[in-house]
Length: 116
Image (cartoon, rainbow, N blue to C red):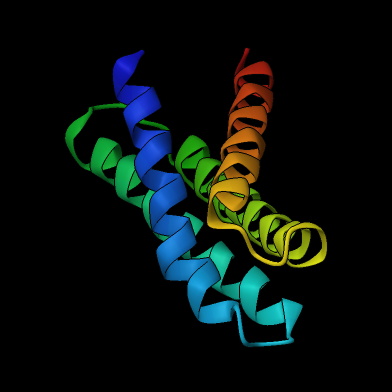
């Protein structure tokens, strides 16, 4: 459980620094969605493609569905977090990190419900 918590903490900080900070000055929501999707696709793809390479019988369907899910979840989380931060608190980093953590945790719970 601690490894999952550590992953999502690092993921939120990575998303804040790599996706959201470069999109601050941009008025384009598309840039945030696109960058967030690519970030999520790469992060979830790292896990899934590694498993596919080293675990016999790892499902390609699960791999690509999970990669798409990670990209989509990150795109929504990043764009929602940036939008709320700009509208509500004029970009307070702590608030943004809390929003992103909440969105990612809720998304991961939905993913677990989908799997089971």
